[in-house]
Image 1 (cartoon, rainbow, N blue to C red):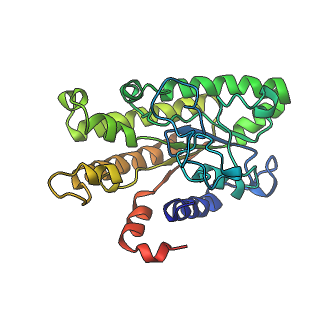
Image 2 (image 1 turned 135 degrees about the vertical axis):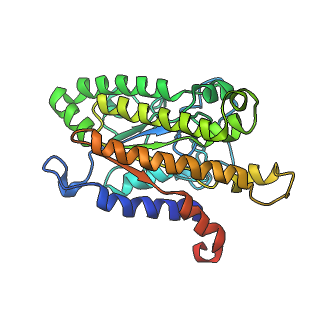
Image 3 (image 1 turned 135 degrees about the horizontal axis):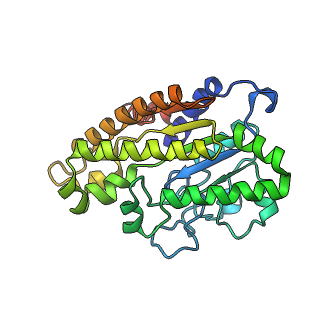
Length: 295
């Protein structure tokens, strides 16, 4: 696990302590499952068997995972959502929905699932560019998953799992780095602020759809400093090796819009708890004070 993942995970776990209320249906206030939507930050291997170059089922990925297996996670080991699952008293890893190694019953009893697909975004065009699973299809897979829960657990227990589960969205990075800042189509139609507003609108639609499907505890992670990603630094021709501030400003604008949108949804959606997770400041702290995060 990298220091970046560790501090991100610690931050989200602290947030969860306040986020998850006690419930008669969940011992000690723990969720019965974690259900995940998003991109490579939370993809556990859904891309392994689809025709895309966005794959991580080969070394050196997975070298620190159990058995040194490259599962399709874009990590040396487990993902943040795997650690969150363990922190909630659930299994130490969240399975990919399309993992053929799981039977329907095993998947339904796994206490969680991720529908995430590396390379995808809120904008369906982003998924088309990368030839991966769009968020709209991830929500369709969630509908299928609900039916599998009913078959295995019965309708009442399945409903309880869906209602009490923690839902995590981690998505949006690729909309900027492989779409808006890389190709001309979206910039021709939107200013940066206009595209940010478009993406925030899509995030709202996704959370509302998850809510209509039964989600009541939703955590939506913001973006990291996009301009400080290794790829952004490499492609920064004006100041090689330095963070791209234009990209960072876009991430900050998106995060501000997303935070406000999640706050409003929290107020509007009856019986729901919707929260925004500030990842940007955590990563900035690592970049500014790297020695504080040496393991």
